[in-house]
Length: 319
Ligand SMILES: C[S@@+](CC[C@H](N)C(=O)[O-])C[C@H]1O[C@@H](n2cnc3c(N)ncnc32)[C@H](O)[C@@H]1O
Figure 1 (cartoon, rainbow, N blue to C red):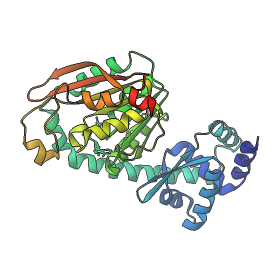
Figure 2: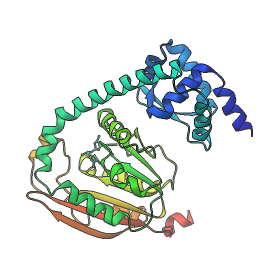
Figure 3: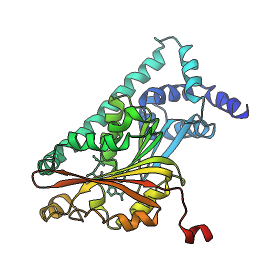
Figure 4: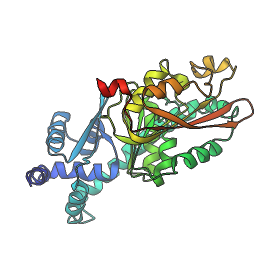
């Protein structure tokens, strides 16, 4: 009951209700975007945001020097907000003006994201031409991943959120992690465009994931490991957040000799052999179930499907 009272108290203010209305329909918003929509000073807005965050009405997600705010994930927040907003006339002029400003903020953001995307599109298209059609890769990954129901999925190096969107219809919640803010901006736009409220992305490093142990039943690592310097540490960290019995899907290139990918696409590794991940996965208690190859014109895409067993290795169990 205490939590509910705290939540209701935090909402009993016109500015804070406006913030909740924009976060309900606006996805993740930065402080400066909220300042722009409200037309109030930053210190004042920050005070309101702190009260809402302390009450669990909003979640605060730091991302480098930026901070995003989104509707709190504690149960009941969405239904309380919806109930309160349904009591305000649809033609309320303040909320209508906020909505118009929110649309402008989103369209500016979309334009910046699509500018970045188009500036890099030529390079990505040239890479795609070297391997099999992405649709076929997606079909193969989804067929493996969806053999069992998925509740919580983590997409490492999510980029534009392609894997989140692929699995979205089959999962309860999806989280995407990426280092690149530009990629995340594209991912956010696409997730919002498709109304995928149950999927979220945030900036983070796959070597130090911002999640406790055993948080996910599925981890996807699609076309990321060839950028990474320490693949074993990356896989160990991915395995840490996977529950016993959870699955890991890794897609990357089979060994190749297209050295040019190092200079033009910053690849560190020229593909991986079938058993390259065996040792790292075994150390983290994962067994490779299948390895599948999809041959393209110049590059073969390999998909590794592994599962975490429930048995602790002897040395850890005794420690
Ligand atoms: C080729 S993109 C693949 C994106 C996505 N998985 C997909 O399938 O479309 C590789 C992504 O890995 C991200 N990345 C590379 N190193 C990372 C790290 N240490 N932590 C998080 N993301 C990383 C890059 O920013 C980039 O967005």
